[in-house]
Image (cartoon, rainbow, N blue to C red; front, side, top):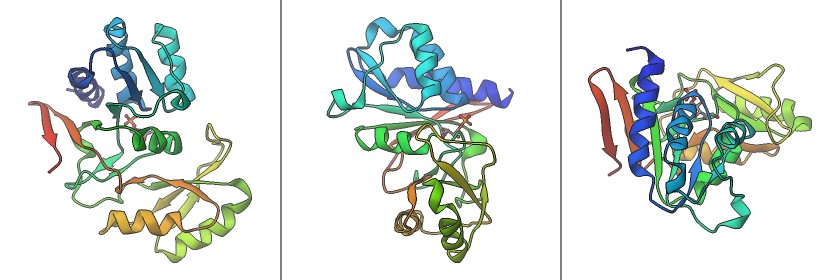
Length: 220
Ligand SMILES: O=C(CO)[C@H](O)[C@H](O)COP(=O)(O)O
């Protein structure tokens, strides 16, 4: 199976976690695109979706999936999203697609985070994938210096502006032993909007697609 076929298998398995009549949260990325394609087939069963990016909104709008603003709901029963890396404690690096801030906001109000991945995303230690950090543009050089002081090598994502009008620094050369502590440390840097560590609010369910099938793991 190709990596894209594995992504699709994980994504379609997540349809089992969509409650009837619910408004659900929807992430961003190529794996989530397969989920949205599957969601289109059961759209009459749900009340709507809160999107984490303009790209996912456009895809859902094209299918006629009703979009709901996060300001219209207090909580969501489930949030489905991919990851760039996930470790054994279900902490993740996200933001390869640059949607980390809205993803983290939607995840924060969701009762259950269902992470959909192909098996290549499972790692022992987070950090081989460069950690995305969304930054207010005027702070970019300051934040880069502070990230270097924390031990990483930040590189500006050239030609990229987030849905929120900000920049992304991708931090290379990390081996993150304590994801929750590192997430908090980066959040202390003035000018950082969000970092792509989802450790304080990690995944609850991991649907990991391997050639032998989709493994379903629950946290704890
Ligand atoms: O965090 C994300 C976007 O901001 C994605 O979930 C992550 O980059 C994985 O993407 P893909 O499903 O394309 O491999």
